[in-house]
Length: 304
Image 1 (cartoon, rainbow, N blue to C red):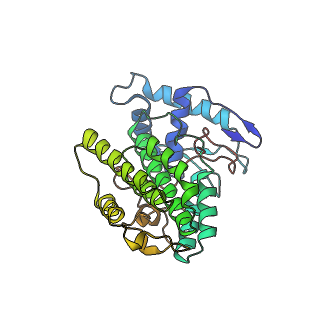
Image 2: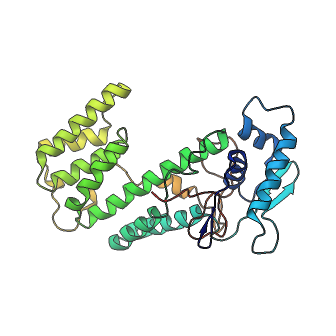
Image 3: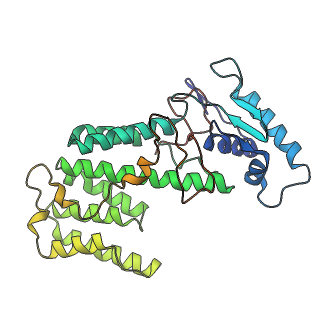
């Protein structure tokens, strides 16, 4: 938790879980049953509700009062909610920066897009929600948020490709494929960066590694985008040439994935009822964590 220049730790795992769950559903009531499910799963103790009230009381003491002189945690039947405003949550900042970056990409302002995506990624401090993965609400949210981060990384690389920064990206992309060996988009980007750096043999070797990894672990062939790029490299396709500032036709598949980000906004509202449908059974309103912008947050959740 960050409070001004102070970094504080809650310490108690159960209290931390309550805070994470409330923040995942910020400004929305989380029922007692949902909180108990996050804390103990399908086998809660006999006095689970009483224990939950104790954890909430401890959390209120830890958070203190908000900017309006009252606790951000509100008791509201049939459970609790946590009130957040403005940039209290760092994901709201992250989301806004990603949307700005996408607008820069659409307008072909690639320098601004690259800088904006980099600023968004600089908010991260390790895995979303730290190592909390006990309950389905927190687990689903953390999984979705990590996918969102990876899409932002892809868009940063695409913006830098448009600026001709292929050689500078090679070592970064090697690190990405090492950390995410089943993420095919990073193999595609690494192959393209190597080819444009006059390293055709290395680009083909990356494809062989990707194919072996996917076949061995998943029993599948590389996706169409990887196969198409592999074929183009073998044929020295003219479309692969850098030719100055990049050409949009070089992207063989839609790597910008607009849908998840589009679902984050709902008109002029700061939150949406529509995301992320594949991962959570009930809608959420806002999202979690704030590093350096928030006055109170659960833990260092977003800065790699």
